[in-house]
Amino acid sequence: MTAAPAQALSKDRRRLRVDEAAIGDRIYEILTTACALVIPALVIAIAIAIFAAAWPAFAKVGLSIVTSSDWDVRAGKFGAAPAIFGTVVSSVVALIIATPLAVGVAVFLSEFSPTWLRQPIGFLVDLLAAVPSVVYGLWGIFVLLPLLREKVMPFLRDTLHLGATPLFSGPAYGPSMLAAGIILAIMALPYISSVSREVLLAVPRSQREAALALGATRWEMIRDAVIPYARSGIIGGIMLGLGRALGETMAVTMVIGNRLEISSSLFAPGYTMASLIANQFGEATSDLHLSALMAVGAILFVVTLIVNAAARWLVWQVSRDRAV
Amino acid sequence: MKTRVARHWVSGAMIGLTYLAAVLATLPLLLILTHLLKKGAASLSLSFFTAMPKPVGEVGGGMANAIVGTLILIGIACAIGLPIGIGAGIYLSEKRSTPLAQSVRFLSDVLNGLPSIVMGIFAWEILVRPAGHFSALAGGAALGAMMIPLVTRTSEEMLRVVPVSLREAALALGYPRWRTSLSVVVRTALAGIATGALVAIARIAGETAPLLFTAIGNQFWSTALSQPIAALPLQIFAYAISPYDEWHAQAWAGALVLISMVLVISLAARFVTRSRFGAPVD
Image 1 (spheres, rainbow over the protein chains, first blue to last red):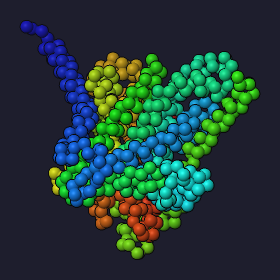
Image 2: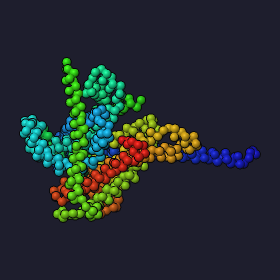
Image 3: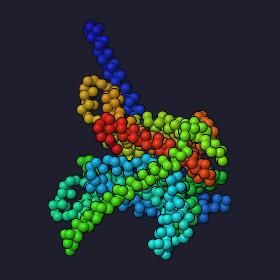
Image 4: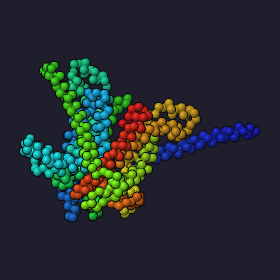
């Protein structure tokens, strides 16, 4: 045991440094893992907190919160069917308007646009997603609603004689399911178009060239070779837009008219689940009322979760091919 | 059987429709921006930024409290959302395909799609209800929670494109893993991470629904974190649905300020990445 002390010392030091590194690595790993674990914890906490708060209402009202249209706070009746109906209808109207536009823009940007236009148009469409919802609502109240009331609704109903169909009948107040659908369409558009653009760009060149070589016109190439290849991704983008539309609160609350009734006409005011919560939560007086609104939130949570998960899965199916 | 000419006509028409779609899709933004400029600029003056809201019937006044309130709320949100989001992003980029990483990635997408009103009532349930009063802190926390998944996914993406060779070089030089990660990998991707952070800030800056039952708004000057606080989006909402013309004018001015903030942050986000990599990364 007469080894040079200097040598032993340097060996010790080296081990010390290795230990230090190991401790540092350990701490770093624990810290980053903890950050990552916040996300599942948050999702679980949200699910538990909301379902726990909603439980009294589910227990008292049962399934009729989904099936009944009788929402009478004083009588303790909480049937949210009109709000669920409004959420679904406004979102469907939004998708009907937004999908052709969004896919059209995506096709334009990925196939036909001059190179110098690609960036600015893509940027302008993406910016739609950055506009705050309350600004859409403000614009909706003071620009869209008067326009609908004075021009669009009379035009649809009287000039085009669509008033004969239940969809476009009744008085034109302005605040309506149609207004909510239009606002939601503008808000969902950037989500659908950016996902669609991405999956269209993922379609291999050879696919396009093969179609053209077989004598297809440029449109036939898009229709028969490009779109089928990207289809599930585009549907994923639409679902993502749907997820946004279902949960959108402020803009819809400001233009939908907030009336708890199921009407077949798009001109009639309606309500959505999100706007029901936004309007009544602050004024809820009884515990059961609060709980019922939490229950509406729970339903909304589950529905958007399913829609978003499906969307991610569909998009992933297409982008997986590109990643390989 | 359609003739060749007919098929080319159809093709031309359909391509024309995609051009039309491009015009129609950019129209709403341009319309909204022109209306905001036209109506907002009319009631926008220096006092809008320095004065307090005036009671109904009096012309003028400003939203100084709401502007400061929004900045405070963004600050709280960043304090919560940025470290956790970036940390989770680092985790995901280093443990790419472990089961935990996969599920964290999926759940952050779930969280990202969560309606903001649901986040609002969740924050009310766990922060406001037990405390017994509304607070800036609860509002900021709700916004911060919304930032986490956004920051996580963009940070992960930015960290992933850092070449492995950089990491290997640092490890070969005897750097411990944590220093390699922090001072080589994270530092290389810093501009990208900053972009992600800015995009997330731009998104939560205009959020209203999570604040309705947490920060709730305040007509008076308050910067206390434990008290209700005013916020620009809340003020715009309250004024927009009020029946008074003076308040409508204020709402337009507020919306112009809010959207300018959001656009400046969004453009900054694009600029940060462009200057570094030569092309924007979305």
